[in-house]
Length: 223
Image (tube, rainbow, N blue to C red; front, side, top):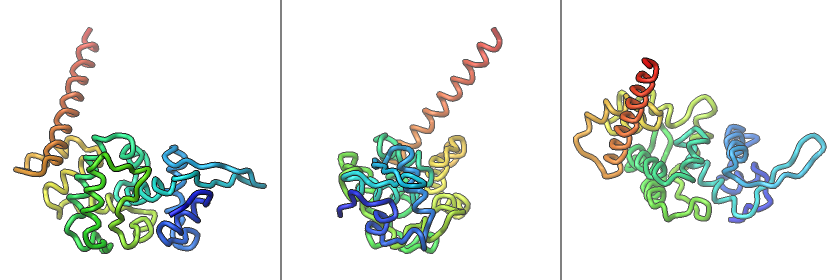
């Protein structure tokens, strides 16, 4: 699907069938955040009152995949990190597999059959190129469009964490950067996938590093 030379709204219409002006200005704003953090490459042409922005060659893949990932991970910095950090990418694949796989819908949003598992598998395989391949889209309607500006799929799941399985709550705490809560929740998980166990190890490592750093600061303060 060729998107070279299209404006951001035109590209979103071609990729997702969404008219952002009428249906979701938020989706355009999200896309522009990826232009600002340089995840998406564009060319700019001067106009009377502003610069027009057009996609460069092959940027449709990154835009498509970034907006799908952004449906789950609302911070554009996190989405960019998925593109650049393989370890973080596999952690996020584990989150998607736990939250979305084998569910017909999430918070009332219908999921296309089998696509969530394909999305997680695609993301877990770091040989698959997010900039050159289309990642499977599990959403019939992107949550950014369906849920609107005041919430996100991840934040709603966090709000309902008490009703989730321990593994779900653990992963959500991890993605929210709440290391201590994640570590406490990890004690409730007796078994899990290799990805889940790897995340538990990573959290323990981060907390140990933070504890050691705090002790070092206290040592120097006493000098």
